[in-house]
Amino acid sequence: MLATTISLANLGSVTSEYIDHNMNILKKCENKQFVKQNVDFIKDAIEKLKSSNNDFNANVIEYTMQNAPVWLKENPEEVQSFVKRLISHLDSKIASYDRIEKVFNRIDKAKIYKNDLKELVTKTKEMKSDMVHLFKMTIVSQDA
Image (cartoon, rainbow, N blue to C red):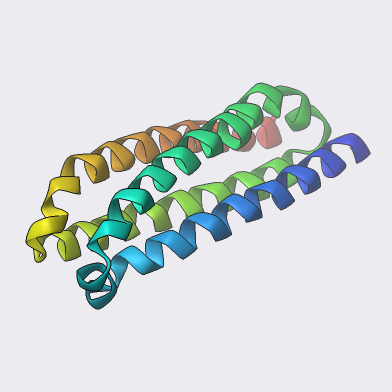
């Protein structure tokens, strides 16, 4: 039980860094005035979001999925709490991408990044699907 708690605490701190980094970029991209004044920044921001999304998937989502069976045996409540946090973050990202798309649609030079946003939404929804599945496993684990 202690190993699970420590593992999830360490993973939680890494996850917080990803979340903070992502949310900073997303907030900038949601601001229409900022986007208009910094269209050149958008390409870099999209690339950073893609990179961060891939890192988040590999280092948090996949790691969680690989270790969840052991963690669930030791401390399903802790796993469930962590997974809820991940789902909440992924929901926030999807909502932010939707807001960004609306901003980009109003700025001609930013419209070219629409497909990149769709790709980010698709990958984020896949990660969320994995976490929802894991969340259901935590419920089954607690019921057992």
